[in-house]
Length: 344
Image (cartoon, rainbow, N blue to C red; front, side, top):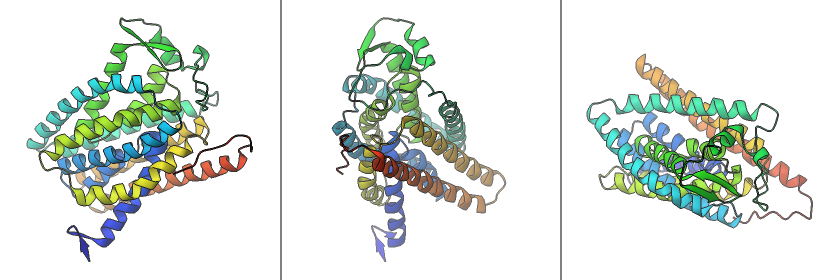
């Protein structure tokens, strides 16, 4: 049986994958396309289709998750809007670069290597910081009180904030940063969005925390708010060239609709250090999957493509399961006087 020219079994697989990724997306402010795009590449889709469809999925899922984070008071709209300008420019540059590499036949290899380096590097850094055992400069996960003391801001962010390059922007939480820093982070993540088919969240969320000093829950919510625009603009650019496959995007979104709401609600329950540990593990497993696929191509061993896909699916299942378990565990420990909104 086929629907939209695709077997029902494959559509069901996409829907299930979407559910898992939706949980990750809502929880981390990322986790969608950086898993979807490699999975589509492993399944044999053209790089531009994998990237374009990944961005379209990011757009739909980010809308769902942002609405939940808005309900939790975890979106800094001023910061989000400031980042959109830089992201838009980066998206166009990234798209041009990918298409140029594709014409030269180098897109698949370059995108894969970039994934391994970025995911592995950021994943190792975040995991190391979270496992230090001293709090890692983390901020209180409760965003009811938005005040931020310098002692609670990561040392990297404190150092960066000490360089006061005009114009300075006052953001939620009482901290002040240079507009150029915000635009620089936005351009870099927009470049990644256009070039790798990602929402940019796997670098923007830690950048907001470690470079700008935004509390993790607000960094997640603001990141998702910004991804609504970067994902929407990016998917539109690729859709114009016919690189968005609705037979992929629709079932993924169907599954992620529930997952994104659940993942967003979980951020109000799970300890911040756990968020950072899960985040780092997720990136490291993604890097491993892409590396295995690339090695399989170099050694002409197709079986490694299947191993890579299994790692991607396993990573989504493992980490989304851990997030769900931690949220349920914390919910059972929540005092009766602390209401928790789990309305999906």
